[in-house]
Structures are given as structure tokens and as C-alpha cells.
Image 1: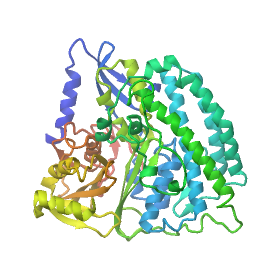
Image 2: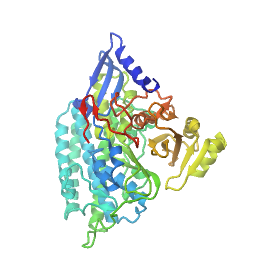
Image 3: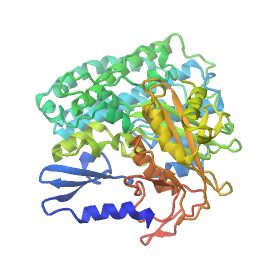
Length: 395
Length: 166
């Protein structure tokens, strides 16, 4: 049968491995796969000859659910895609719906600044997880504890604003769930002041650590052309040496008004495109996010101050019914380009079809390409450096 | 390059028959390409130095409903160097029989991104991609029956003797 041909070919390959080779399952219940990812390895001793990823252990039918819910009700589902950076997912989704409605220019500046502020806080939290768990993959335990300690501050701040620790449903179509609490801006400034020296400590402990460098530099080199061809984005693409960030490329929200750099790999240690460079891009991005947070906090305290009559829900539509159209909206998530493709039929408040493009899904697809012939221990280092969230790979 | 310029370039290279229609009512205009031409069109758009669409942002399979009897694939192309974007679409009529899936040509040879996206479209919508190197189900188990994102999908009552509750 034509439709099952590929399946039979795969089964034949697994069943007919030669006697010196071994089929080894890594995951789905293995801490180094960062969730329920299963990698089927064909190994020859310690050498990985082929990696066959198996996904879907966390498939929750996001796209099917989205067809039965109205636009506002889908926002909590986007939280659960990349659950390490829910704010960024909310923002991307909401931005798409607002553009379809044609209200993106009417959103008050204060709302946009709050959105960017919480997104950047969430970006730091996501990168801290990536860095901390990457340390564990390599065998360093302390950075993990330090990262979680600092991430906890961000979680507490976002809990204070939205009421939830991880899955916020905070950014709504046309506005926000609530204004930020009184004193939030000051707390952000305080956090930046607290966090900057901690990053320096972390760099001394991990980034410049010789053991860490030996394990990650020159491992899993991803050349730029391969990265682009596989649709890698975010720190994966920048780790291969390309200065490409949708926050600057598309200039959405208030990012054009903010001053920040796009970090990309320069290959100070190892080669451009290896695990260490991908990791370093995340470290640098944290510093840039801190800059954005500082600027947003100042803007929110002065130019776009809280006023008694300010209502972040003023523009939230009672019923979201976009005109008949299809629209693809993309934004920069901590992992890369997150995109939503909407088809609206113009009659109902439910989308006809929503397809989400998860950055981790595309970043992960390159794994079999870059891990041919590496050691099993290096494969663990490569998976960690990709920074996948299975909630988004499987959706 | 603007949308019209790209359209003219395609007409010049592949003749007016290669473009079936254009959809310009939305915010992002789309070109409907004749489905037999899609691989050549994509390859040309990637390699031409004026278009340079080196990045496939997204590939989505779409079921246009039971009445329309139509399936489609939507390609969102983007150029890192030239900073422009383009939407391509291909359509095909199909009677929705699970033994007779809609067939499109695979663009895996142009962008490797398409590999997993096409597997996903095959898995969830039952769109068959000719020339795909490894067209297996990706999110659902290999022995799953039916294509859940189709508009007429009926949930199975059980899977391996596990009752499926809704």
C-alpha cells in the first residue's frame, strides 16, 4: 500500500540492523530529552550512526480544539504550547487576531509596553531554564539551582500580575487581563539590579568553565545554510552566526522604540554554530532583555503612566469576528519564530483553521542531521543546546 | 520584490498557466499555483537572486470542508536577505475517501523544513506528498486510523481496547 510504504521501510530498517549495531531508545522518560521526546538511536558502540526522533507523546490536539473554540478561548491553549514562555505565545497569537480585526494601531501604548515587559521577563525565565537544565545535562548541578532561584523571582512577579505562575492567559485580544499591580515597575527595576551581578556569577561558574567548554565547544556544529534550510530560528539560527531577530525584522509592537542589540555567535570559543555558541547567544539575550525591561519600566513610570481612568480592557471586543481572510502572524519567542496561520470564514467567532508553527518543532527537526557520528554523551549535549519544549513540538 | 513583480517573474519563467489564480482580498496576498508546478516554482523562488526565498516559515495542510470537497497546502515563504514574504497555495479536489488521498508534490528537496510539516499534514489531514523521503505519521501513533483534522472526522470509540471518552 502506497500510504504505509514509508512505515514499512522504517520497520524494515530497525529490524535489519547488522549484528555490530544496536538500536537504543533514548526517552521518552529520560531527563536529558527535556520532556517526553523519544529518540531511537542506531549505534555502533558509543558512536551514534543515526537518530530517528519520535514525537507526539504530548500531543493535545491544539489545532483541533482551536476549531471548536472562539478566538479568546484559544489563548489559554497557546499558554500550554510553549509553557516556559506563555506570555510570548499569548502575544504572538493576540497580535495575529488584532491584525485580522484591524485594531492593532488602536492599542494604547501603555498596554503595548506592559506586553513587551512581561514578554521579556518571560524570555529571561525561559532562557534560565534552558541554561540551568543544560548545565545538568553536562553534569553541572549548581547552575541549575541558581537559575531556578532567580527564575522564581520572575515567576513571583508574573504571578503577582496575572494570578498564575506559568500559564498566564494575561494578554488578551485588544488589551490585557488587568493593569500591572501598583509597584510592579519599581519591582522590575529592583529585579534588574539584583539580577545583573547574578548573571556575572553564573558566567564565571558555567560559561567560562573549562569542563563545560570542553563538553560543548566544537560539538554539534550546525552550519548556517543547513540551519536556514531546516527552518531553524531564534538562538539556533543566531548561534550559527546570523544576526536575525523578528523583533527587529518585523518591528512589531513597541520594539522599534526600544534600544537593544541582537546577540549572535561570533565564535569566541569553539566554532560558530556549535553547542557553546548557541548557549552563549542565550546568555547574551538575557542581558539584552534586561535592558528592555529597564526601558519599559521607565516608560511605564513616566511617559505612559498609570492613570485612574486607564482601562486595559477598554478595547477588548465582546465578540471577535474577523473578516473572511487568511493570515499568518509571526513573532519572536525565546525559542525562535512562533507563527500562527489563521483561516477566518468571516461569519463565526471561531477560526476555520489554526495552524501553529512552533519554533522547537523546526529546531528539533535538524537533530538527525547534526548528530550523525557523534558520541552518545555528545548527543545529550546537542539536545540540550537546541532547547526544546515538548509542549510545543507536539502541540 | 513586490507581489506583482514576483507574479510577473513566475509568468515569465513558467508561462501564464502555472498560476491558477491570485487571492488579494486579505492582508497577505497569495498566489494559487498549479499543483504540478509547485516544486519548480519553489526551487526557482529559492534560487533566483531577486526573490531569494531561502526560509520556509510554515507549511499548512488545509481541509476546506465537506461541501467544498477541496484540500489545499499553504506555503509561507520568507526571505532573510531580501526581507520579503510570499504566500503560495495549491488546491486539489478530492472525494474524501480514505483510500484515495489528495496528492501533492513534496517540496522537501527545496526546503528541509517541509519534511516534518508535510509529515504532520499527512498525519492529521491525510494529504499525501509525492516524493517525500519518509512519509510516516509524526504526532499520532503509527497504527492510528483516520485523519483527525479533517472536518468530517469521527472519533474512534476505542484505541487498543482503551475507551476514548469525550
